[in-house]
Structures are given as C-alpha cells and as structure tokens.
Image (cartoon, rainbow over all chains, first blue to last red):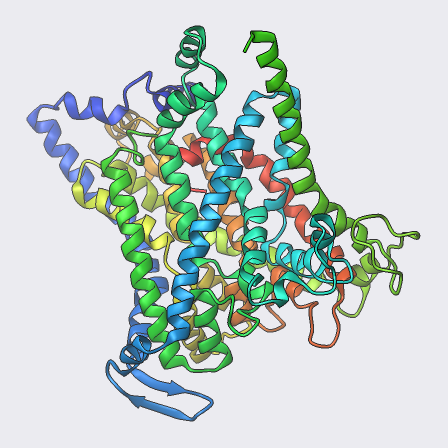
Length: 328
Length: 276
C-alpha cells in the first residue's frame, strides 16, 4: 500500500510517467485486447447507480423547473396557467434582474481578485516562513473557513458592522452610528469584504499547495543566477503556477457566482434591493413573493449561464492539461 | 541593494505581513469570543473584553428552551447519511470512470461531473420544494438528504476518481487473471488501496453538506432543521440574541475543526484534482 502511494506521488511530480500512458504505448496482443474489451464493457455498469441518482436528483428536477417556468404560477395571486415563454419575455424588462446580473458580475470580479491577491501573498509568506512558524501561521490563516458560513455572515453583520459593536467602523475610523450594510452605496462592499474574509483561506490553501509542488531545483537555479525574490515570483513562480492558479480562480469564480449564504444572511438583498445578487434575487421572487413560475424562469437563465461558464472552464482546463490524470 | 540589506527588507515585509494577517483574521474571532462571554445587559464592547465575563449565553445554548442539541443532532445525522449515500453511489462510478478513461465517452462524462458540481442550488431548490412537498417530506431528514446529494455526489465522484487513478491498472489485471470478477477487483483490490482517499473524500463531502444553508433553509422548518439555519435564526425581527448565536457558533464549529485538520495534509492531491 505504501509503495503504491509513493509511486503515485512521484507521478504527480512528473518524475514517473502516468501509468495510463504506458498502457497505451504498449499495445496488448489481439486476444488480450478482446478480453480487455469485454472486461471494459462490464465496467460501464459501475456508472449506473450514480447515473440513476443524477437523473433523480438533477435531471428530473431541472426538467421540472423548465416546465414550471412556462407557467404563470403565483401563490399570492392565485394564478396557475400556461403562458409559454411569457416569463422569459418578462425577464427582458426586469431591471431588477438586470442590475442583479451586473452586480453579480462585479461581485465575482471583486471577490476573485481580492481572494487571489490576499491568497497568493499570504501563501508566499507561509511558504517563506521558517517551518515551525509556518505551521502555526497556516493554522491561523485558515480559521475563517472553519466557521459555518451563515455564522460568519451573522458575526460580520451584527458585530463587525452594526452598532453598538461596529468593530470595523471603529477600526477604520468611520462613524459608528450606522452600519455599512444599511446604506445602499456600501452594502455590497460590506458583503464582499466578508466573503473575502470567510472564503479566501481556500484560495490560500490551494495556492500554497501549488507553491509547495514547484520543483525546488529550478527555484534554486534562479536564485543562484541572482534573481531577487520579486523577480523570482514574477518570472518563475507565477508562470509555473498557471495551471493551479487557473483552476483555483475559476472554481472560486463559479462559487462566487452562485453565492447565496453571505448576501442573503447579511442584507437579504437590501436596503432597497441595492445588494441583490442573482441567487438572492431569484430566492426572493420564488420563496418570499411566492412567484414560482417567474422565479423558475430566472432560475433557468442562471442555470444556463452556470452550465455554459463551467463547461467553457472545464473544456479549456482539459485541453491545456490542467485537470485529469496526466496533470495530477 | 546589498544582500544583508535585502534580507532585512525581506524580514520587515514578512513581519508586517504576519501582523496584518493576525489582525485581519484574529480581530473578528476575538470579537466573537468577547461578545459571547459578555453578560446580558452589559455595555457592548466588540474590541475589548467586557468588565465581567459570563457563561450565560453558553448555558442558554446548551440547556435553554432553544438549546442547540436537536439541530446539532440533525446536522450530524443528515450530514453523515448524505455523505454515506453519496459515497456508496460515487465510489463505483469514480472507479469506473478511472478505468474507462481510454474511451472518449468516459472522459466526457468525467468532465460533465464538474459541470454538475457547478449547478446553481437556487435553480434546484424550486423543483425540490415542490417534489418534496408532493411526497410529504418537507421538514424531514430524508427530504433534505435527497436534496444534499446535489452538491455531495459530484464532489465525491470528482475527488475519489483522482485517488483511483493512482492505482495501477496492472493490479486489476493481476487480480482478474486470478479469477476475480469486476466487482471483486473493485471491492477487494482497488477500494482497500485508496482507503485514505475514501477518507479524504468522505470528510470533504461531509464538510460541504454540514455547512449547507440554502437547502436546509428552504426544505426544513423545525424537526429536520440544521445548525447553520438555527444559528442564522437567532436574528429575529424583534430581538437579536448576539451572545447566544455566537456561543452556538463556537460549539457548532468544533466538529469542523477536527475534520478539517485531518484532511489538510491531503490538500495537494485535492488541488490537483481541481476540487476544493
């Protein structure tokens, strides 16, 4: 067992080529290939239970939500009638949704950008600290992800931003009479700051793992050639970490796009809808205003965006060799 | 710049960086602990310790009318069962995907799993609400476990596949020549070899469903309500029980703390799998 594991780690570093490549190169004789083929045919059955579950948990519900989106179905107004694509036509005139879409885009850019800057700098720091300190330091850095997100959201909302505590306002010297979250111009910023606090340690961990996976010989060679640390980071480390950075940030981007807990718990989209993201806007439509038909059509639009984006990301990552056996 | 000077600039930058991180991470946590220890009615201080410390909030949360035990128990049961079901479904699938990668169809399915992992919960929750209500399973553990498979299953498949990839197919072949059938090769050869991987997958899946908010918020109201929603619920329209909420937060965080440190060592593998 241990032997197998060390082999696996080696292949991860690229020292030993991935087993599958060897298997492909040494083609088996015909009889063996036939046996292999019939064996593989039986292998597809292993996918069946999960496939059925995906059908039950994802495919059928999604078909159902598409069906619902064709109805004017509002519990508050006692309506339930087929209107075809009527809901989708309504979306085109829904300024609130348009703003939520733009705001979500901005939220993703801000959160991912801040997460990357913070995560990367702190990962470099942890990587450069002497070993004993580094371990302690890491434990402190990741503390926020150990907090349940809804709890982190409330902590920030009620203690960090809101009087009488208003810790944040006191620290940065703002007036403590009103919460950052209570003003339409700053509410989204408040959420962004909390989201960065709460989830950036994941980015830190992934990037740190990437840093630790860099081949040391190359870094040493660059240092012997007289590269300063900033030069090393810019010309050697960043280019070499491109795959890890791409995967980390795109996961982060999709996660932020879907983000619900922080915005919903902290502001519920308010004040006056000024901090609605797509998910909170749809949630409010469907579960607060009980406008299920229209909520479903908004959900379908969000679904399409998510599927297109994540497909583009994964296909690109696969083509570039960032994910899959050979990279791992 | 001379080398010693450069080194001292480096040390200064490092120290400043460490100080910043300690403040950025530490101050909210300090406030959390401080407010949770402030007695009812004492002046509100977020940045320092109150003049008098009290465990009232912890007592309320651990033994009051609204104690957290029911919800902590729900969270533990629901997260464990959802993780178990997800693993039972995911492990054979991940093994199959790992062994079939020479076929384009299997590779495409593997990439599709990533897309499934990124489906918006908000879109799923609308049909779930109706389907689960039709089955009279609102506010039941079964209903919530069903919904939680949506985030859990793709994560479990994606993570565990990378571990199966490390088992060389030659081992499978050897067992096959010894007369084992596909299921035996999977359960007696491959699965024991990825024991660690299964543990890591299980913990990551557990952590993901344990912190779920949106599914539990929509599908449960009391009997199957989970801790994250319970914690958010201290904020009522009439009064906000900051101290109680924060005390519950600290108690509810303990299981995560333990599990997290177990998987942390395996982060590198998980990163390269493109999962977090």
